Length: 460
Ligand code: AMP
Ligand code: ZN
Image 1: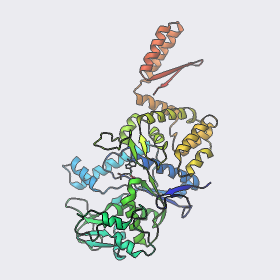
Image 2: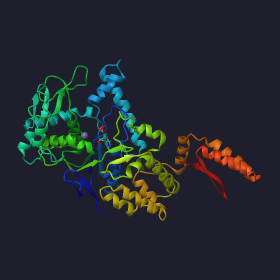
Image 3: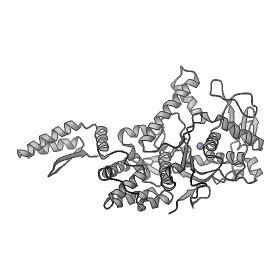
Image 4: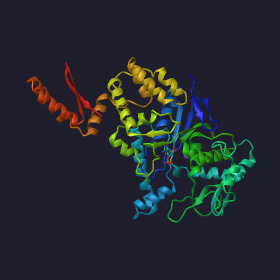
């Protein structure tokens, strides 16, 4: 069985052949840590976690290296720091913002059942590598210094054309059209209107580092160079998979490819480029102004992380996803059922009916359909397959307890009412026993009578 992945560059599904099966390497662009992550940000986290798990299953846990960076230098971080900690020196305020946001991000994605990546590099710890790449680019004639900035020239890249990819190939754009369509009020220090920043001077008080290329003023990196540097440091000049959301294809990933390939004189940065589609909420674009901006943190107050995870995976990663309350409720019911029948079962090997669709460009909706098929006939296979997909982190009892806590139902009170109802039934006072059953229903508790006695659960 072979793995096939859709590659944004070639726009087709291709058989995945790792450069080195003993060291399968994947880089995914991580969060800029200035605020709570929203449910759209959870999509790449969950999608590439499934791929990470699948690669570990295929190549062995020790043979897969997954790098997801943390962007901790950015204008948005500086703005947030100045707003939230006006009394502190900016650098201290920035540290507070990135520490708090980074911790919150970890808490969120742990709850979603995402494994921690092998390495989570921070941009601020890789400034040296950024300077090195920038100097290589200047030496190669792909970048130039102007007014304490360093700029990359896509036109120089396409003119060189010696064993390099074409600028614009990944995002399927023509550089000539970009040049023609670029804004006219372009910064005066740019030679070409599509040139982008590799390095820029810092304003007083902003984080700053010694600059490359003999620039006297201290400065800070542009966003794109951060990922080229971190990927290089941890995965090398050329690696297997690079991922992120579809919005990153241009300019971020196009520019990463340009920087890395020109610095190291090569045709490719990653062999497969994978991009998840966008998430919208109740059929609308998520935005702060529309008031439908939902953070993972808020959702986790109402739903277990695995419900969010299942809800995400019901849609294929390349399709847009419409995040709705109705779908969440269905996902919660499905997981309740799986927890009840499979969480305490001894897991078998993941079933072929689930693994095969995953091998076909991570077809998770079909894998989930196969899980439903296993439910009636192979509980061990169901349990093993669910674990491969990152579910069943808890026991059935933990799951039930968490639901009770989340619902605010007092388990002791429920038990007391059930005992009262049993007593009422014993003396054939059915009016009273029905009253108690209805009362429990209004509390969100469903009861079931059997020969062994009365059991209860939270009804959603
Ligand atoms: P950002 O912090 O905005 O750079 O985003 C971090 C990751 O989340 C990137 O891979 C983005 O492509 C992805 N992302 C942001 N918004 C959405 C969305 N609404 N749907 C899917 N992915 C998103
Ligand atoms: Zn990136």
